[in-house]
Length: 349
Image 1 (spheres, helix red, strand yellow):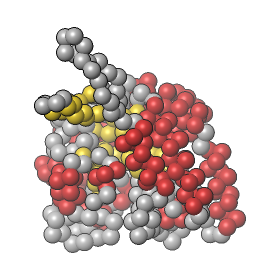
Image 2 (cartoon, helix red, strand yellow):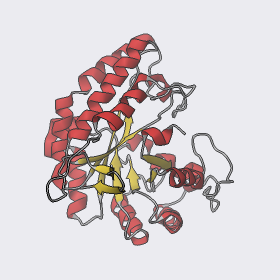
Image 3 (cartoon, rainbow, N blue to C red):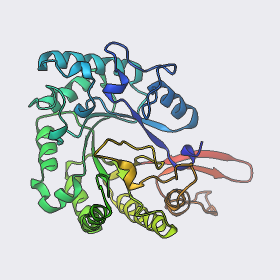
């Protein structure tokens, strides 16, 4: 049950290929067939709702993980089937999620699997369809690691121009999601390739560059969310673990300090259980916050310390002559106690 002690939000996997491996038989219910890394969505929701963890949906359309039975369909037929999926999910989960990620990683041209992946209006269509069935929920666009490119190209970076175009067309985007995976060594086949990956990541991850990119993306006036974070561990030593923890503190501090960022989600929290194929193995990154045996790494301890000690307000105050107190604190939920009264309140944007 350590998850709820470290996090207040969880990503629920709604990948279409494993949620509905057989057409017309979605795996919503708790007693559904078990699939590795893809628990039944109701099981995840039950845990979140029982433990005070806010769930978010990932995601309604991600072409890379489309079911086999969809891959031969033409565009018109595929849209009918995708609308049916969105409608079923909305009927079951509307009003229960922090947000619904509508589309994910559509910049990944090499991963397109269906007629929808290259459809010119697919983002507009997906958001219009999602809004039709989710009129009051937050809808999010999510894309891969775009911050370095945005820092270099400012308002002419692809992701900025995409979001700018969609919003000017009236597409109902509530939140903008940006991934931040540092997949060091994910495809390395030997030590030389791994060392080369490490050098590239060090050059790529410039804190000032990241802050500049966030300044650019905040121009839309939408909340920014760092949706998927992986910070590698460069080895198995205590020194390597400390470096990961130091990097985590740096990046989370950057995101926490930026006024446009209101949510950060860590990805693959436990070593050894990540997405892996023959040529792409995220386990190589050792990006978890816990070891494979669920014992915490230094990064997990660091993260809990940031949330519960550093970015935390706890103090004793004396009322003025009229019985009031004033304080400056972090956003969040509070409990106030006097000798005989206890009450809860919140500070929120």
